[in-house]
Image (cartoon, rainbow, N blue to C red; front, side, top):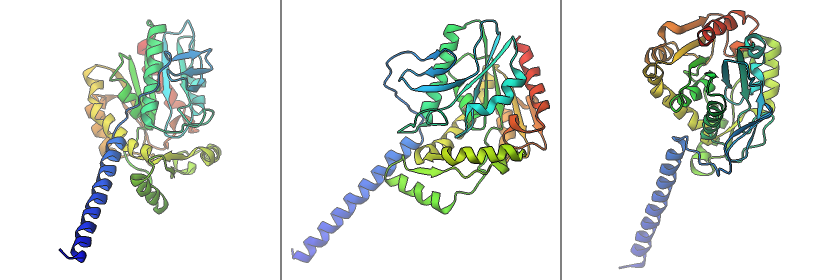
Length: 320
């Protein structure tokens, strides 16, 4: 066999090996991206400390908002939207909290007042939510628990209700479509993340003026996003998986005869009428959908939000 033929065969073998390695990397990444698995190094049970922060089982401090009181009958757990903060539920706290109703929230990992998360994973946010519910169920077994999720928080709420016997669920501004087309820069970073590190950061493409009519709050959103608007490539793909998983599990709301309410701002850039109709039907909540024609994505911070809070209070009356 001539040297040229040997070199040619050797080159083909090397090319096959490299191609196989690339396929393996992509296959492993796809599995990782389509999973919410999170296996923390647990050293304790999750616990709420003085209504100031929730300490997770792997010793991560989650900044806490609101308080759980002895006299309340209902606890509303508010799960905030993608890359936002529990602080944005302030108006909800003011308008809904009473002697009978506690409203609480927290900042998810790596956001706002929490420390940076080195390996961002939406599975960690779901795990934290489950630990918070576990703690409340054990500490306050007589209290009713209602999950209130906004945006991606609504998707997380749907998955959390699989594991717990909660009493009610409120889905606000649930994401049913992509509001923006992925720009060229992010597409390039996503491609890099597919082959290199899945922790490569991309910027969330959201303008405050697109998601709320209040210009002052829109400016506040944009200022907040200046320091809090990046997510990892892994999280980018997990969001798609999370939306699909929550849709597949929406029927459990109906199966478990769970009391539910869907709040839809019709002027929401993340709203798709056909998909929302399917979710409402699958969850058995078609008759419990309230549409707000003029409002945008962040319902609770819209200037014309009075009816939103009235509708939530009316829904919560059944648990008192």
